[in-house]
Length: 237
Image (tube, rainbow, N blue to C red):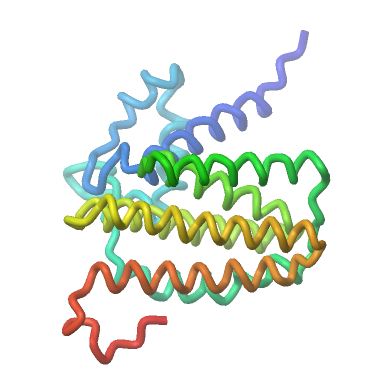
């Protein structure tokens, strides 16, 4: 019996990569934490080679960095440094309805509605980690609306460069619960509008809705991170 070695290797790499990326973006690995190859290899029951490849990819994507004499650590995140990334996300958001649009079938629409139901449930019992996870799931579902692979790749890279900033910023605010509930409410409206646009068959509208919400999300984060007098006169988006 022939064992499909390359396929198993790719699956192992993908599993480790997605797991570590999720941990970084949910702040299970906070900024500054050191990731040791030997510890991860033991956890995933593999050699250090695939772990090293995963860490290299995450470093290339800006989520990790190598520090001489220290090792591989999780990068920190600052709203000012992400401004240009957000600007690019805003500009390419509406391309989802223009480049090789893919209209979802009935099963995918059911997934949209289940995610929307989960968001509505969060309004009753806010949970930051569940909100962040829901946001990631919704992003990946939206990416299935386009068949343009370069657009998917660029959008995903930019998304994961920025998505940690909300959890970090919100957790530093005294009015954390109010901020969380407001963000869930805004996200619920975005999801509702997007689902309605998809059901109407207008994917162009989906892109415009997404663009507006990304821009507003950055504006709220920027305002939360800067006192009014500090932000005065700065071009936000």
